[in-house]
Picture 1 (cartoon, rainbow, N blue to C red):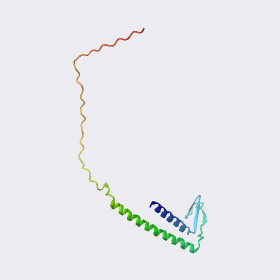
Picture 2: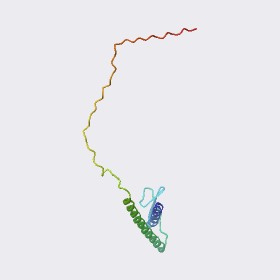
Picture 3: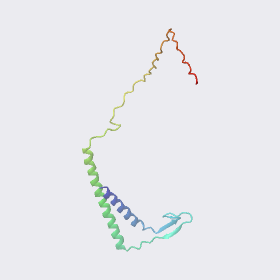
Picture 4: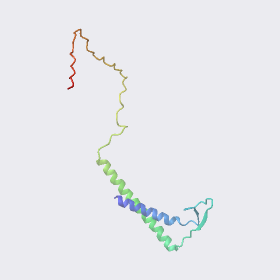
Length: 133
């Protein structure tokens, strides 16, 4: 399906470029072309060398391509409608209930329990240094 859409877009743009060359005044500005002149623009002759038969064939092709594009769009919209009906509804922010606004509660830090100092005396014997030989 994606390839068909890409092909239709390429055909649309290709047909549009062919019919856009009917303008008579085209200006070359540095390395790009425009229909409006710029400073130091050079006018380029852009005559349509196609015969009237070729032009009418190109116009008919453009119309056929546009009709095919519209048919593809209708088909895509129909497929999307079927897929949307089959899919479970998705929750959006509009369908969610408003959260309840409750006042902020400030919690106090709990006091750390400290060990009580005992009155008992504890002594330690320092270790003796070993004599060197």
